[in-house]
Amino acid sequence: MLQPAGADDGLRSAGADDALPPRTAQPVPATAADAPGSAPPVGLVPHAEAGSGPAEAHPQPGARPVPGDRSAAALAGGVTVVVLSPNDPMTRGQLRRMAELARDEGLAVRWEDARGGPGAPFQTIGALTPALRRARRIVIGDPFSRYVQLLLTLTRARELVVVDDGTATMEFVSQLAQGEPLVRWHRTGHGRGARDAVFAPVSAIARRRLMPGAGRHVEVFSSMPVEPPAGVTVTANDFSWTRARFGPPAITRGADLVGTSLAETGVVDLDRYIDAVGSLAKAHGATRYFAHRRESTEKLHRLSVETGLEIVRPDLPLELIARRGPIGRTILSFPSTVVHTLPLALAGTDVKVAVCDIDPEWLTDNASPRAQGFLSGVTGTARDVHRLQSVPTVAP
Image (tube, rainbow, N blue to C red; front, side, top):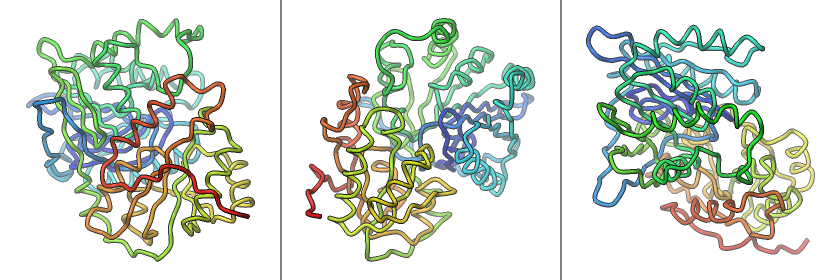
């Protein structure tokens, strides 16, 4: 997601490990120095997991989320969003479009080709270190990103804000609360490779930075349902910026289907996934398939041939695409971020969001033991969605 510190909700962009932030921004780290006499606020954004816009967070018992009520215009002065550009062309394209939107909102955007070669990371870190040292507030979009974790070790900021509407936010907050290492939910096993072992001390420091402490305030700005550790503030992203900026959309009579990268991450068997997509499309009359940015060209070609669906490669996060329209009266999805964010982005319209659970038989042998429970939790905590208990069987 792309969003600068202080924006009302998230301008979003896609990415695998970095992106841009909302109120303070979505997938990537952002730093903001807003104290009198301090350096201008800086927002760092790595491409993160997701693909939509902001949503709403559920705080721990007894706490109430603070509405995201600060407009981008009010926070634009002196704020710089730094994009740590990924290599993936689809993610880069979405980030470019989101950067344009951020500039339209009055935010300064600095594009860093942080992965442009062997020396690029060192050049980027060296260039950003002075601002990170001076910043009073750091806004990050993807706490699982190694790049972001490394940058967190360089800051003495008293305020840290995580802005992310991806499902990974749920896992991040859970691991933070339990004092566990920050590991993406779909990764298998406990043993890590040599690179993980070398990076472990850096990751441990970053995790400690993300816990509130003496003189340090930590906030999570998200639409996802989370129960943060004591002392962590939760601010709900209600997508008010998205609704005010785009739409209302034209609504078609048919249905649209949202794709996922569960096959690419090794969680779901590819053949099972394609069969499920075909069955859903036939049962509900879906004609379009909105591809996730990380879905492979080969897989999408096969889907087109075997299901007859029109494959759409969005150049913006799906929340913005849907809000601009035209969009189907029914949006079908498997467990993913959009079952939380689309109902918020499309509030006040007649669009229905329906989610189909992942059958345990679709999981691969390499899927993480946590996969089924995590995916079920994504579906079970979604609000204002229609649940499809299983994929309908449709005669050929």
